[in-house]
Image 1 (tube, helix red, strand yellow):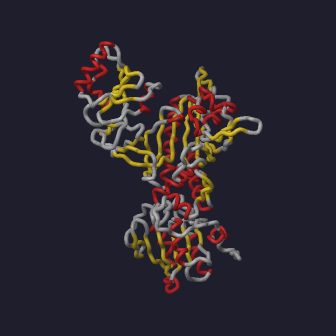
Image 2 (cartoon, helix red, strand yellow):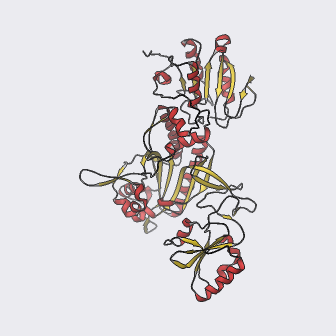
Image 3 (spheres, helix red, strand yellow):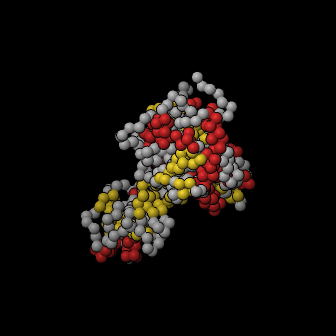
Amino acid sequence: MRSHSTQIPESSKLSWMLLPTKKNTNAVQSTTDVLIKAGYIHQSQSGIYTLMPLAQRVVTKITQIITEEMEQVGGQRMSMPSLLDPKAWKKTGRFESTGSELLTLTDRKGAQHLLAPTHEEEVTGIVKYMVRSYRQYPLRLFQITQKFRDETRPRAGLLRAREFLMKDMYSFDVDQQSAISTFHAVEQAYRACFDRLGVPYIVAEADSGNIGGKLSKEFHFVSAAGEDTVLTCKCGYAANEERAQGRGAQGVNVYSMVGDEDRCVVVPAMRRPNMLKIREAWPDCGELKLEGKMEEVTDLRRRIALAGSSGAHKYLVDSAVNELEIDKIENIKVAQVGDWHTAQSGDACTKCSTGTLESQTAIEVGHIFYLGDKYSKALDLLVQHDRKRLPVHMGCYGIGVSRVLQAAAECSSSSRGLRWPVSIAPYLATLVPLYGNMEHVTSIFATLSNICVNNVRVFADNVIVDDRSYLSPGFKLHDAQLLGIPITVVLGQKFKQSGHVEVQLRVPRLELSTCVAGIDVQGDEYEYRAFVHVDRLAEFLVCALEGQF
């Protein structure tokens, strides 16, 4: 029978929570397995998960941070339907280009619908219907809603799911200059978001993919669990592997197009041509094949000069070999000089004179795009401005909210359990009473709840009590570690003897000295422990966690 307390609310007691934790196993487990074992998520079917109460608290904190930062740059929150009419998608061409990843259905009247993976077409239609004057721009509209994608092979839990929670914002400006300014303003808001989330991140130049547009950047958490490769340099340059630029080995490789061998791509030796980049110049480019062995520069110049005299070839010459001035050979038809190869780790950085590129595996958690007039032109969203009637310029900005949850766990957890950053932890502290009566527990709960940092009661509604009397002390301590809540306060034997509680701190990237506020601290990079008298508990925690809030 559950008892009711007027001092510790039921919502702050584990006995009232649906928390189906499981015992530890010796097998190596993925972060998805740990999240399931810790009772954060439940797999309903392949690629579809239920967020359990603790995970919902994490998501609530993530969305609160995002909402605050989006509103700081003029974002207005709204909610668009998940069930969409595909007509607008067909007008923009995305219905065909997205292909089998779209989840579609037919209603009883035979009408076709799709489950939205994004809302560019829908929001463009709304603005077209409601906005009548250029004076109503700029607009920045965002939502945090469920999205859907028919993944061929769902994997890695919430990282590659068929249903997911995403923040998507859409901007509308009267001209390109204003839209680019909006892009950079939102980029700064994203940096503020990720600074507050508390997980180290990289901002990388990126390809726009099926969304469209010429300018885009990705936000990544560095993790071995990621599916993206980001190339970075100490000078600050960072780009997705698809977009990165670097200078490689001497010499060149020549690739010809299958079925049209008059067209060739010249790239540095030992480097692969980048089809994403090449198709920007040759949209109809098919498969490329390597022509024999690596060529010497002089041999290639002679070959191109001969080919140029017959007017038979077209070349894309990579700028990494452009110092050869191949494009200046008389009569040669060089289609374009640019970046046509895939950079790799060890290449010289093109943005500085001394650095080399390093490869890092990462999880994409955010992506921002300047779209230009791709959607406004297709859907006839025009604005009368400066005596001209032209398409509105747009941008779109996404953050995978449920993806951030798992990515943060991937970056901070270990074989010993989860560790949540302070800003998004479901609770800041868990109180584990092994000894002591309810009066002691209530007193310490009040002490924790009333801790102030910068005049804010940061622990209010952020303390949970493990009052599950039906569990052994060992199981309670196991759960405290498994759940990854940053602070665990244990009322053990020393509390019974001298009023000292054991404080366990599991905070990612926390570095403490061996003495905090005059109290001895022991531990390693995963966990710190200290025995603190209850009268000094608040003082110790404020000192230990300085800079975390």
